[in-house]
Length: 72
Image (cartoon, rainbow, N blue to C red; front, side, top):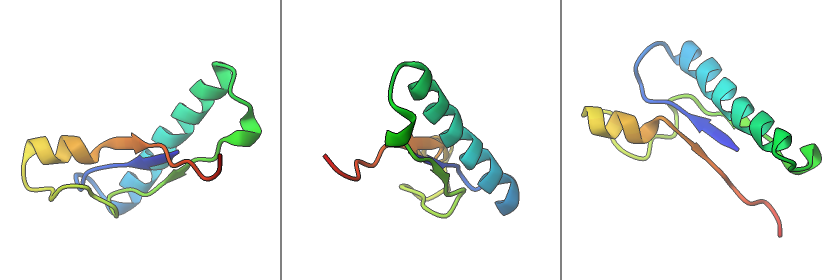
């Protein structure tokens, strides 16, 4: 589970925010019955945008959580 932010705020603050965002989703999934051992989380802050942070709409797209399947 990856957490991401836009470029608003400080780089350090965004790193913490994105990590907390990913951890919150992981905790919710564990509470919903997914085995804890099957989930990892990491925050990437503002370092991996999917759109340029030049408009409000693009910034909203960059504030996200992504799921990466490591193995099936």
